[in-house]
Amino acid sequence: MAAPRWSRVLIKLSGEAFAGEEGFGIDGEVVTRLAAEIVAVKQQFEVDIAVVVGGGNIWRGMTGEGAGMDRAQADYMGMLATIINGLGLQETLERLGQPTRVQTAIQMSQVAEPYIRRKAIRHL
Image (tube, rainbow, N blue to C red):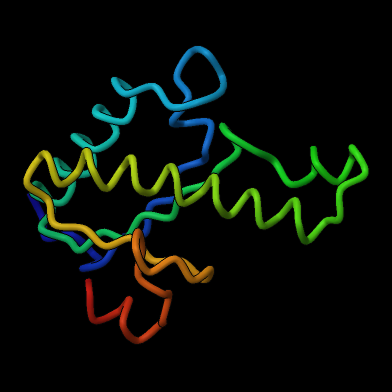
């Protein structure tokens, strides 16, 4: 097999990817399968992988806004949903032996690192 063209790969996982057939919430079997695929790609192609997750399986800011919520408040709720998915994926990846970092623009130092671009690049 030829060497990969890139040494770093960014994967975007929609929140719906975590939901499985139910369409909402987090399906543990689905998250385990996603994590196993990420680890397999990393090992097969010897690339650094960054994953950006969504939170639409838990909350959508537009839903809250449509119900009369302040858009910024609804978006904050979506950011929290994103962190929930990120922590679920982190737990599963680490159980598979893959070291991880969860970073967020919202300060919550007990569960995730603050997002700092240069730090994120160094973590790769």
